[in-house]
Image 1 (cartoon, rainbow, N blue to C red):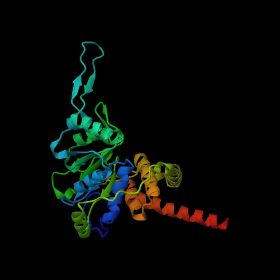
Image 2: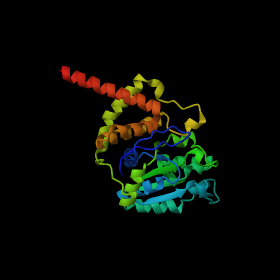
Image 3: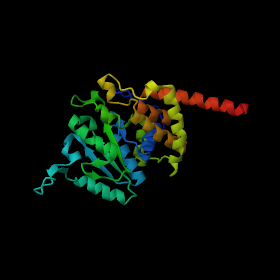
Length: 302
């Protein structure tokens, strides 16, 4: 995909916008790092095509669920009683065929796969609540999918249709939010290349960067404890990225992946802001730069 200036997208949720190439790289790194992605963008901008291109590039099985035609039982399983006529009768949930099929295909690919929730902004709260356990633990009712099955979702701005909803705060806080606003040149390039996705160069041992990242992020939180958990008061903002213990854990994985893949500063910004929000993300990255400069000065003096 060709890098260029992205066009702004109107949305009630504040999500950073980067160039097409950087946004695609950010989405790819997040998926490789197994951090669930919420892809924001206007209808017809190719969000679904991007996710499918990523799955094709990684050679992973992909299963798409369109929120507009499903209810909560399609994600949680139908409840039934394990009736044996004894006192140990209890409620269970039937395994869903789509989840079992995806798990079987994922096991043929070292446990890797992609579960894509399309048009998630149309889903009512009951359906979004049914997704919480899937996104967090890869569990569907009583069935456990391989944890290598990644999760991604696509949603349109609220202005696109009156029937849309914000993501609930618990679901939004389980994802890194990236805006997809491809420019004209990237569309031309994608059309000519068959929407080829350039895989980020993330080495297998990327998790070796976690201890160093953990040391930096925890030092930052010690210096800015108010940013550890700051859920927005406004309902609109709760449906996007905001700082919590969960999203700072996402930052650990995302920045470790960025360091291992030598990602540029804009990709780092998109991922950090997409996890903890623009303000907390900018504050952390500024602190990180200052800490790095201080380390360089100490090293020079020595």
